[in-house]
Length: 135
Image (cartoon, rainbow, N blue to C red):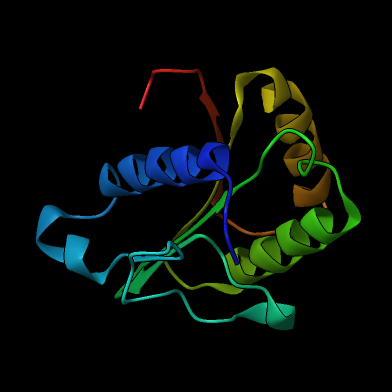
């Protein structure tokens, strides 16, 4: 599926964030769902494929990019629930990172905060806001 330029920029922002968490000698294990990628993330819980996925040893990182009109859609909320469930069940350090346009940052944080209450566990959620020209 052809992705918008905005979505592609949001995925780039996600990858930069994931690279700050993953040890540099493991960067080649980061999977990304981009047109040029040969190493796409797996389809995980409930048939969702994240934009960025890393799972090695005791570290799990799931990244999802959302354009403004997608942040609060039903399908997006289903993805967040699936990814939060996977993070809550992971034994180790788990992260769910969303990348959104800066105008959607507060809404994305609110959605994650509310959904995180359903899935107990010791994992981290983060929202990265994209501003034009920042990537």
